[in-house]
Length: 565
Image (cartoon, rainbow, N blue to C red):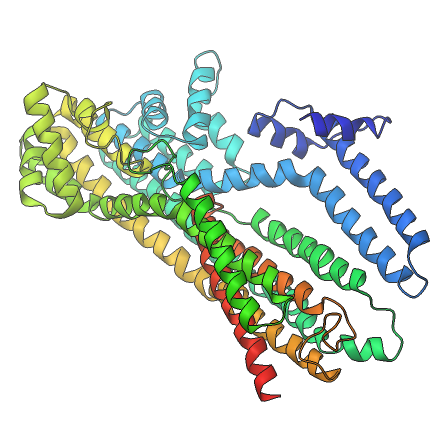
């Protein structure tokens, strides 16, 4: 934060942070004061304004207006981005957290079915979960011990601005404690329905509103900039001031900054995300691939540069080296984590079947420990194997259900799934409750099955828009960019547009090639984050794949148009 403090000192006047900025800093647990962050944003604006003024004086007269406009816009984007960054990060974290809301409500409902106590239900829902949402509920549970309001009430009030259905659902959970058995059961079912319907409706509303901004992003970030490339040589020929610096400034600084700002704005309005498993680099199945990824990056960059040097103009060498090198490195680095993701998803897919088998046996009077052992014999696949391992650990090491599943040596210690962990925590509770927990376990299976359908619907709703973003960044953008660069070169009678190759617009192909790689980075990252929240592993892997394909498409499109022109 020393750089932030230095920038803040450039703006010595007093500032007043907004309530939103204060909440974001508090939510992210940032040590820097909100006023310091705001002063730093204003400091960036002052530096940018001074740079713009100097550039306007030093720039040639024919490019002065364009340089001033580009630097001024870039300064505004950076300054606003610096001020808005904590709010955007807090929003992204809340979006990921709210994906756990249906599971949290389910844990509370299940605990209420065993004993109608909102205090115990809140404590169990918090302790059996993981992540910001569970941590927030745990904080409210502690505060409720000395406050007049219940943990569910204060927790619901905190998250109501971002997910009103969560607050409504928890209000029903609390109200159910004072009802008769029949009415309580109906009210708890209604609580589950409310949170699932709220998730579904918010996603549908968000998806329906995405078309217009994404279309604008597509038109002004892809179609218009790439189409104008073919006109640049003609504009230069008639005396319009277009230089190497101008092209690089617009296509490699201004447009990427605007694209990034638009992507952040879209993500800020993302209501709920279902994040992937939280797999750290300490996971036993994730080897340290940093060195291997670096070697792969350098080898792929060298190979790409060598191949293009023999076939394409010299300006394509940096494009190929960056595209192939960075793309390969990202894929190699993130591949082990993706393999763990696949394993966790397989376990989650089979979780419903396991809970159904165990729940029926417990409802028929069988002990949870015995039901788990029998389910391990009856079920195949990843979940069947895990249940069998759990039964062996219980029998051989005399462990409890919780320790056999989630202990340091438990069968799920290397399966970082909040949903599976929450379900297993309830099984451990059921082991103490006995037969009355059987119907609750069956209800949990039904809820997880329904939640899976809600997630599938959400992805299906976003797929048309996000699929377009993905294919544009990976295929269409590089295709149009490579073709228009070749056409621009043909307009001035040369196969290239760099000095010494008959071109009148230096480094056009390089600047546009780097812009194509920018599209291949930002648009797939945005597509992935809209569907699953901003997960570094998924985003990194998608961007790596996109960079490889986009580089090939850009070079192939250029060469094809040159060949037929």
